[in-house]
Length: 360
Image (cartoon, rainbow, N blue to C red; front, side):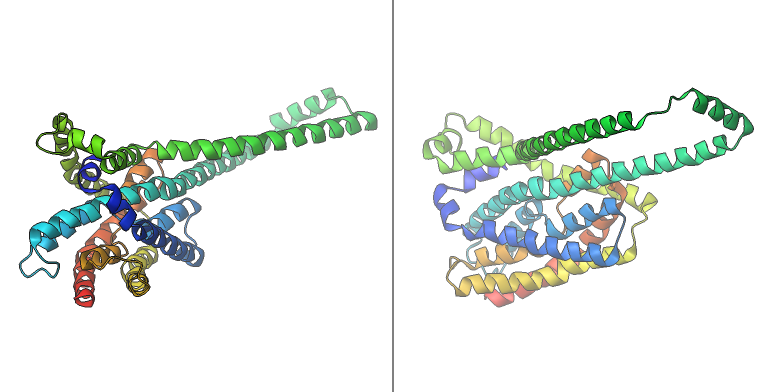
């Protein structure tokens, strides 16, 4: 993110592309609403709700665009003009999209997966308690246990009414203090979580990349043949280029887990595929065409194409990283990735053809 943004996105670009963060926010908004509807209709396990909403809302706004846009520009007869200019400008669009997507994914989607992990831990704790109760009931049924209970009851002193009232008053005052302390703790935890999410490596890379791209003298330090610190940019670019194949390899390894042990309902998979590749692309066409009619967008058709494609991408790969981080729904995430990325090969090709036909 740092290497692409520092090189291809300037302050003028950030200002002129002001609609792109709104467009990405709309993909998350409508995808989240549709995912919530899927959850309410199909009623999956509570710890899967966040995963389903996240996969419906969060698209792969970085890696795939960095591959798709230059590939279309290099095709013969591309509708977007000279392939050199198209590739350069398209890389800027893809880099900006990747950075903005990182902000949304590592805040909104991260919080959804975190909440799913809390629900999963609560479910495990409830199962453990229920098993313990069953074991205790079996133990209480023995005659020896009944005898021990009788001896313990005789040793427990009985409370007077005055003692009981004083205990109730003490408990009420303690509960009131606990509520005020818990609300304050929840507020602090909320801001701490937001700060923690904004300190994720992709977000930090995007912020620093924006700073270097927007400030000319910082940009000249690392970008260009005569830049004194160009070795830093070259080194980061080399390392960054290796992340895309590495992420794809990790995705392939995760798919094996899901195929072996997932119990995800087929209807959930079909619903997520329909949301991502039927409903959202149609909404994307309406939104981009409407924004263009109102004069919110530059005249560049490649920019319009990128905005439309943002509604058509498969789920963000970082969701798989988050499920591994919190240890929740890893197998189910792998299965959703398998089917959504298989369908993406057909869906992206078909919708890209429609988009280019509409724009030319």
